[in-house]
Length: 120
Image (cartoon, rainbow, N blue to C red; front, side, top):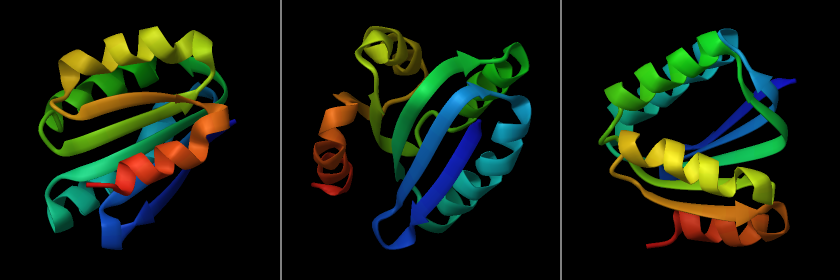
């Protein structure tokens, strides 16, 4: 359960893999990494993969909203990869908090998501 975090500084891409239910501690682990990349590169791109994802605990949801408000213009593209049942909810949840281009991909299309996140 939790979050795995990978970054490709050459391409300004951050990959976050979330499993289970996100906690406040998960945000405390990866938010500083993202903020460092924003300071170094300006706008970044995020690939958010959900595996057996069950949403957020209340404290984590608050951390997510604070992060989204603070970094409203820092994310250029957001690729969300997960189960079909999350598609509409995640897109609707993310849209008010970012100016990023957002696309949702099924797990079977992970390679297509990776290509889109680094493309022009």
